[in-house]
Length: 46
Image 1: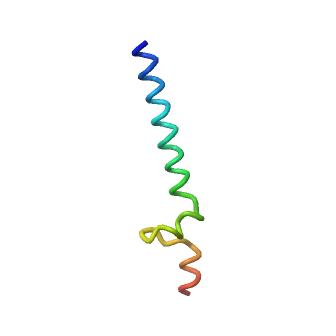
Image 2: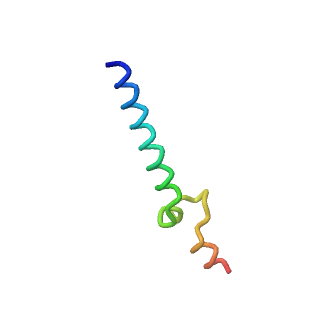
Image 3: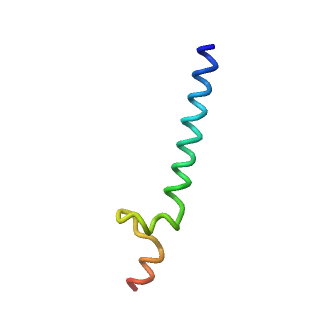
């Protein structure tokens, strides 16, 4: 059973990592983060 548990934990971590990548690369969330300038902020500065 330990082998299956390790596979399940690895799959959950992979899903969370993929979800985090999608959330951080989403343009709508970039405006809320001061570290990453969004295209909208760049357009307003010009």
